[in-house]
Length: 109
Image (cartoon, rainbow, N blue to C red; front, side):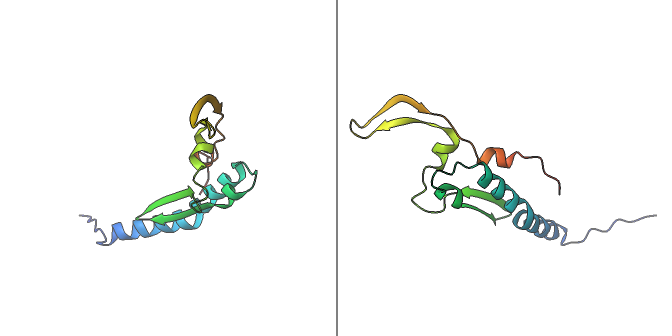
């Protein structure tokens, strides 16, 4: 009769390999694609892109500092705020997605 023996550390081994793949391969690839797609009027937003692994989750973000709080507005588009009247007008700025297209690229391992 054949027996199957599970390594008691199997889950930790899988998570360690997963973290290494996320941090060493996948994260940098997504970050580079996001940089390539990002609008570069001043390059501040593109240069704020960052990737890291936290609690076995890959995070790619465009929030390099408090000065770059507008990343979601660029990604999703927004309505125009008029500071003189403090009113949000009907005008819309079209989205310029850069994170989502980078995320959904077909990649090979």
